[in-house]
Image 1 (cartoon, rainbow, N blue to C red):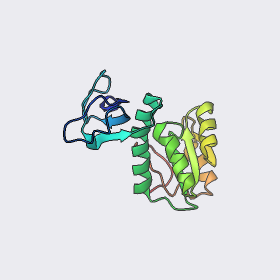
Image 2: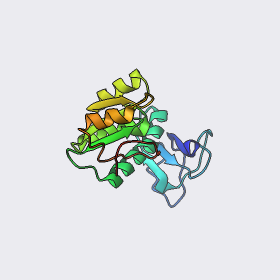
Image 3: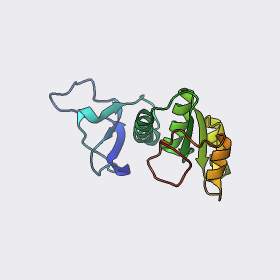
Image 4: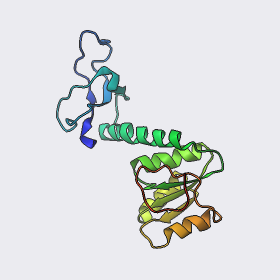
Length: 165
């Protein structure tokens, strides 16, 4: 999937496409491999305009991780005051999930591996951080949430964790 995203300045478009597109910086999903090529073809419906001076690798990451994070938050239905457990809280989608959950007034437990990642999760808004590479991290989540565990766990990967929906 990583190699299905492309970013760059649009060279040309077909005759039926708005001629304002050429020259614009865009991110697009090709739907298949090709993201590491110097040139790629994408459908106009898959184009996402980005500012003229982006750092393009970050723009493609945001396109992918941002879509994932928004989809997970929408599906989880996070409400104000609920505990949200975000695993990989310092990663691409995880770091966005921490911020989106906080914006929804949720309380966030950020789980990550290593002190730098835990610090980042805290900086991004996690109220509590736990190291999921350490034994007993599940118990830390239970303790931090007053024994109830997380109300919401918007995670694409399955991991043994305290109560979640």
